[in-house]
Length: 263
Image (cartoon, rainbow, N blue to C red; front, side, top):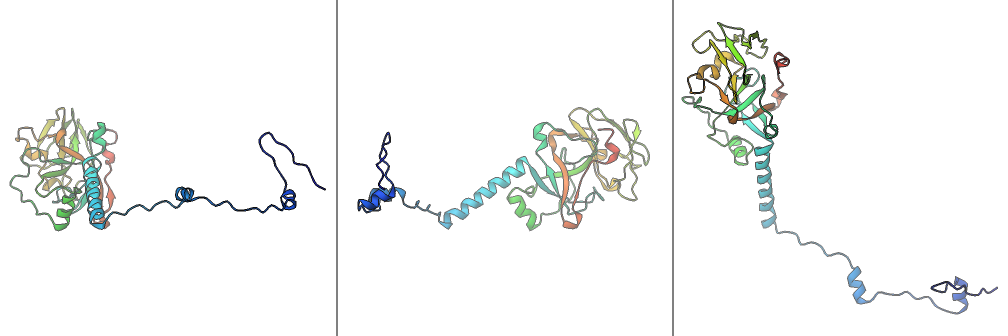
């Protein structure tokens, strides 16, 4: 039975039977050339020539390395045994350079890297950098050859009184310190000229000492350098947070328990 078309507000809708009865043939509407151009596949991007791409990638890598070294973290080589056994000669440590940007200052017990404040390294033979250090220095992940840095443990901060009498113990604000990190066989204080002292740390400075007490030329032995052996905060590069190389020496560098209640 044939149905009459149903009128709609905008167009007539006819069922499939009407189309067949009318003998109409459905034909596929093909898009014209202009439509095909608009709906065609997207054009492929031109790839950079390797002669352009590789130098560009190298430049980006160098910029990133510079930014990381300047603002985040930097690797340093340990050139001597003055921080044994916490750090061994030729260890590589990573130094946090980010937190000082937010106003953080070194605290007691932290191991810090700082620029030579007053020719402390004068007269000391500087070990020439290896090829690896030269390469890392070139990209900014290690100090460039010739830069003068030291690494020691912070013992006193502004306002602290630090004292050594005889062979120790070391006293901080009148209280003896328990120092398990001191090199085995060493005494906390050295009973020699420079090793006996009592100092008060001025504002903006640190008093630092090496863990290998009898093999460290630290604040004790530079009290005549014009700053009383103190390290200005402006010379501090950052806190050493981890031993990164060699692999068997991997470890973090936390603040010893002896300083917990004092910090």
